Amino acid sequence: MSFSLERIPDYIALAVALHGVALLICNLTPSPKDNEALGTLSVLAVKLYRAMEIIAGIVTPLAKR
Image (cartoon, rainbow, N blue to C red):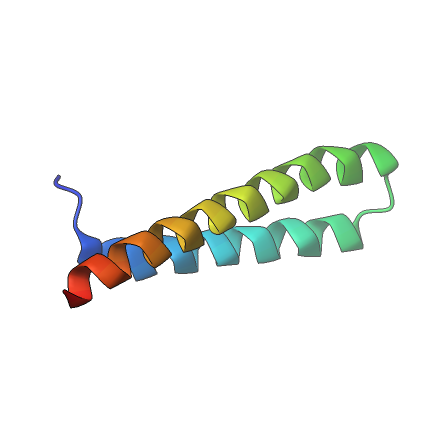
């Protein structure tokens, strides 16, 4: 399996979907312990998404040249 720039949108969509599921579970569960655990996962997903945006910003100008 080779990494391809064509698959980046798929990975971004997956990250957004996982983040949405984590938020849904956090909002539906009354337990603070569950919310704390999934909240950490949500923060990790947001950081990963930001990293992808930064990488995309670096790659896109290079691809246009």
